[in-house]
Length: 297
Image (tube, rainbow, N blue to C red; front, top):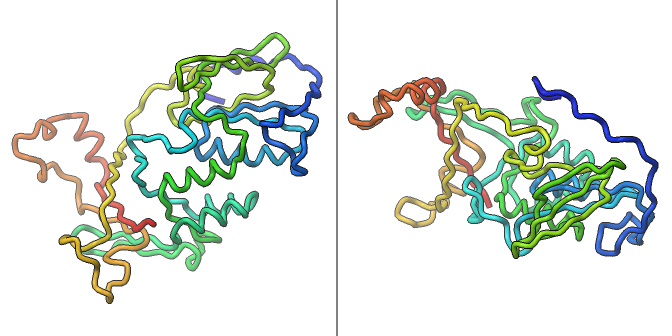
């Protein structure tokens, strides 16, 4: 329940609607068309949408249609996670949860990544703050995984099967008098279509979900004290040469966090406007700036 928001009225109760599952949609575990008692639409085939679609497709009597804006042959470029392969940490608890209900998918994610076993933190001057092994020190029951974002997204979408409708997105929805949900679908060529008879619509487009905003309103933006920048660099020496054999994978492997000793504006240019920007100094300087470095496939 969101604060300061009234509960939405429940749709009227109605009996199940047995219908035949179209051959293009997900099928039951037998691989044969089944009688459908529940139709579910998922907006977005990112991590949550594609993994949910994969699980629901295994349920008898459930028809799943997942609408994804990007094309099947590519992962959509995003300013925070470019197609060029920004790194993604799948922390131990995330992998443990996935292994609990889908060990096959968890294993495939591990196959395309590197183990996420430890985290080490130090200051820029070299003072060690901590170094922890998740499993050995009892912080988790399993290790995590380091993957390329686009590799992982491509994998989970492929594992969701043929229930994904590519190059399409949910542009609007309406609850009908009988409680079913009608969707307006936008397509890559600019056309739209209407699809009806859904029992549930899942907003899985991420933090900026249009579906969620239409249903609950757009939440106000609140700035915190964390600002992330991502950059990929070759795992080589500064001159481009490979690392010496005695260094193995290079200077870095599993995640390392490097902190400034104390937040300060002293490193800014003398004429920088940020030195007197109250919003900057109040927000940014409340936390110790850090750099996180890890090797990815």
